[in-house]
Image (cartoon, one colour):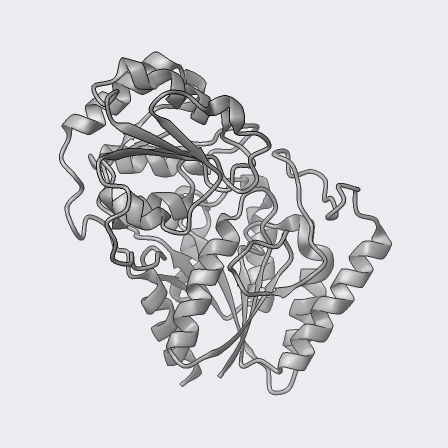
Length: 362
C-alpha cells in the first residue's frame, strides 16, 4: 500500500517532525511512504525534497532557499515537480498535511495535486492530517469546508477531544460529521538512556523564534530554587546566534539527538508550546513551564498551553508577561508540583492513524 504524504513547514520544523513520526509509524505498519517536503531540509529526516520555501512570522510572503520572494515561474516549476512525484508514486493514499484548513499560500500546487488525485483511476483515498489546534479564521472556514468536501474523504485530527475539541479552533467542525476522526496525539516513544539527569532543560524548537525565552531563562536561573542545577539551553538548529547566552552553570547547544531522553530525565523543562515539544514533554512526564509563541496573530500555542495548564499538567507564562522574575516564579511553582500522571492525555495518535488508514483501504 503506497502513501504519498505532502507536508510544508514554513517557520518552525514542527509540521515536518510530526509528519515524519507518522511516516515512520506507517512504514512500521506495512505501508510504503513517500514523504514529500516543501520546507527547508532538516538533517536526519528522509524526504522527497521539493525546492524549499520558507516564510517569516507574518506568513504573508514565500521565500526560496536564498531568501528571495518566489515568483510565478518558481511556483509553476514546483507544482510540476510535485505532480510528477505524485504520478510516479501511483499511491493508494494521498495524505495532505493541514490544507485546506491552513497553508493557503501553497494552493498554487495543492489544488492541481488534488485535482489530479480526483481524476486518477483508480482514485486514491484522499486524507487530510491536522494537529489539534488550527489558527482560527472564521472568514475562511466556508472555503475550507467547501474544498474539504470536494477533494477529501477523511480527516485525521491528531489530538484528544477531552483536551481540545476541534471546534475550539474550527467553528464548523460539526459539519464534518463522520469524516472527522480523532487519533490522539502523535509522538514517538522515548528511547532508553540516562542522559540529562538532574538538569534543567530549556528549548526553543527549531529556534527560528524563541530567542527572548532563552535569554529570559538564563536571567531567571539565579532567581530560582534550581539555581544550583546545571541548565542546558538548546537554542535550535535555526537559531541565529547562541554565544551571548553562555553563563556560569549554563550549557548552550543548538540541538541534540537525545532531546527526549533528556526530557524524561530532567528536573524541569522550559520551552515554547509547539505541538511536538509539548507532546514529548507529556510523554516524558516532565515538570514543565510553557511560554507559548504569540507573535502577530498566532494563538495556537496559547490555547493549547492554557488548556493543559487548566488540567494541572504544566505551568504557563504568557509571552507578553515574559520577564526573568515571572519565569523564575513559574519555574519554582512547577518544580514544587507533581509530575504528570501516565495516561493524562491520549498519546497514541501514530498507531491509531495507521489503523484508520488500514481500515479505510480495506
